[in-house]
Length: 358
Picture 1 (cartoon, one colour):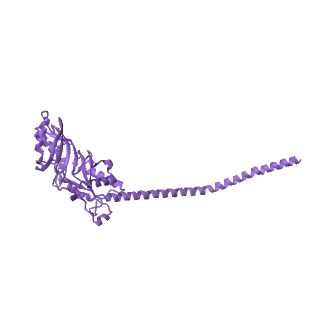
Picture 2: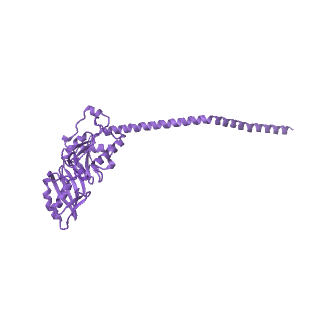
Picture 3: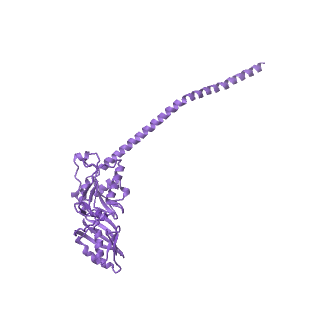
């Protein structure tokens, strides 16, 4: 009997012991279930706040960086050189460069407003034909005022001419207007006439050129089909000219000349002097003033604010002291608005002697 009661007591105790934790666990789960929505909302809100704070911090840092780059862009002053590829005109290339710099600085494309003072100026001095490649001198900030001195400096070209073929543009982009035999022309024949084109000579500019008639470029008038008279011959200077290679019908020239000289006219005149005809197949400007293609011309992948700032430091040492930059007026350095203006100067009228600023 006592054993039975003890067993029953033990069973009862076991039941109470096993049941109590189940009831407690059930209650805890119920409480947890009741609290979870509020906790989840709090956690979500905290996460959202943390994300917004991080985004704000990142945005602030990005804004500070863009502001710093914009200030650096506006502080650039001087001249440097870029490598112009075949295809775009000099003006199109300058626009591409300007757009890349403004985008890097986080600045919107400027709206032209001649009433406002410019704070970002960019221009080029010495136009290259769209089919030509090589050194194109660019001025930024107060450096645009230095571009005029670039026009009077020497230029050097490597030109490949083609004998037996004449075109209306005097290069490979034009329509063939005449064909003549060239098979009897020898290397010594070309070398023998080059002296006639060296020194101070008279040259007739091409009809397709930047020279103007009634305010319009001759090339524009020609493309419209209008009748255009050739400009009279004018004095130009050729410092040196040499034949680098001759593989008929092609011949390669290395020419160093002054401002206002046309390589296309030179090649055409050489063809005529040889009792044939000729036109430019390829043209590369290897030097303009102190800037060379190999050492100073920036390729497009280096058209960045930092790379240009470094190029300006390097190029400043190449320029004569008289062309150095003057210190800006106090009001100029404080100006922060951005506007633009198109300027075209023709101090020396020639296709290679045009300054364009934006």
